[in-house]
Image 1 (tube, one colour):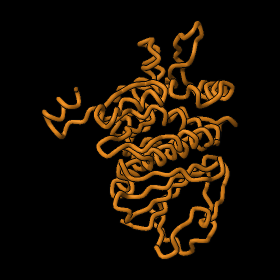
Image 2 (spheres, rainbow, N blue to C red):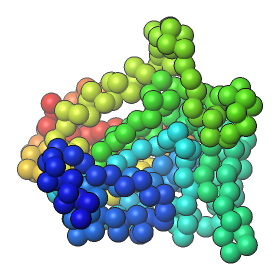
Image 3 (cartoon, rainbow, N blue to C red):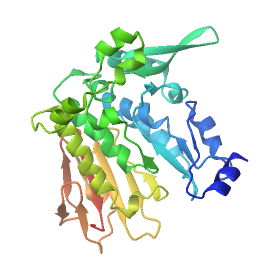
Amino acid sequence: MIRLLVENYSTKCILITETNIPSDENLSYFGNNNEAHCIYNFSLAPLLIHAIISGNSSYLKRWSRSMPPAQIGNAYLNFLSTHDGIGMRPLEGIIPNDELIKFFRTLQKSGAFLSYRSSNKEENVYEVNTTLLDAFSQTFDGKDNFKIRRFTLAHQILFSMEGIPAVYFQNLVGSKNDFKKFKKTKSVRAINRKNWDFDDLIKKINTKTSANFKIYKELLRLISIRKKQPAFHPNATQFTLQLEDHFFGIWRQSIDRSQSIFCISNLTKFKKTFFLHDINLISTDKWFDILKNKKISNIDSEIVLLPYQSIWITNKKI
């Protein structure tokens, strides 16, 4: 009824549900293409963060393969964090408890707070409170110098997934945990709600040596590339590739089938290789890496991905 009223008022209005619940329940808000236009894809953020921190895509892949494509007129709203923290309820039944404990401990070592809810006389983690950048400070193996690479990788995967990507402002400008605001407000959610001074922010994102500059410019570059690709339409076909667990890969195809994009990411701090013949590139097409603006001359060649590197391979360079 609400959707009928909204569409009767204006066909340009979009009805979005923000339901931080297990994935199967969340999907029910699409109805039969007659309820919400978009649903917050709460499962993606914790699963993707876990995959990158652990270097293991198995749980992310299992979930990705099980997600039904949204019908035309519906779409997933994909994001990695919000002002309310990173919800953990969607992980219920997907990641086993011992793996979750390891995940939460790693995030706490990076400065995150855990918020709990009571269920059946048990305390379970409801959300993790941290900036996304600081969530990637370390992995299951400890600290290293790849924090910004992991952060960038997460957005490269976000931008490639079926649906509509949304970027929280604090992520766009590379904000760090605001412990001063937390101490002042006594609210753990304040850690990811930094109040920027405008002049200070402008200075940061224009200083080429700052992390804020590197993050801001790279995300704008990725968005510029992404929005040109028909295969990244919110309802374009998505298929999860059968790759080793240190990779995460998907294939996207435009609605008119004119463009394919293979998006493959290395989730580890080590160089990893794969062969292009394993993803079945069509031999009669020309192929390009659009993230590096580079032609791929041999479709049977071996591709080396650096730590936390992604490659977007397309047959239609735009």
